[in-house]
Image (cartoon, rainbow, N blue to C red; front, top):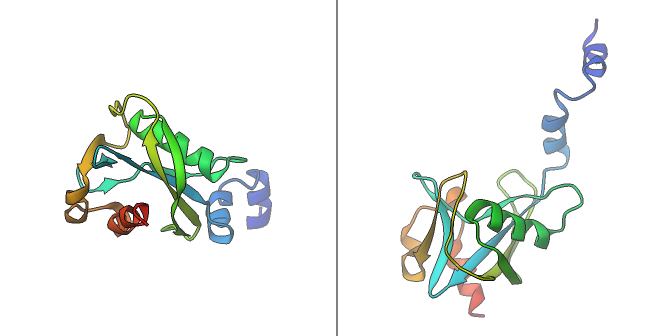
Length: 143
């Protein structure tokens, strides 16, 4: 059996994810949630990260940002304007929205780490995943 036949026999799936990411990287969206002078983040123990992740099929950037905030911190959010647009670490389009907690701002859970509130004056001192310019995002909130 040749490589092409084996690939088709397996349903074309083994390398679909890899090829798909190379040809069309997955877009992502996140939320810069600010409340009472602090930014909501997920502390992995090695670094902090914003609630952010890839879009599901048919999902808008705004829908993905709300979903990621809820999944990674347990906090439902209302989105504001876009504070960042660019390319994510994998080459896909990435959008970060300003956001505020909809109800109780107490983070409850995350499978990726511990949700925490980081005071705005401590944001620059902390280590962020992919060296994201979080201080730039916060500055755009004031524009």
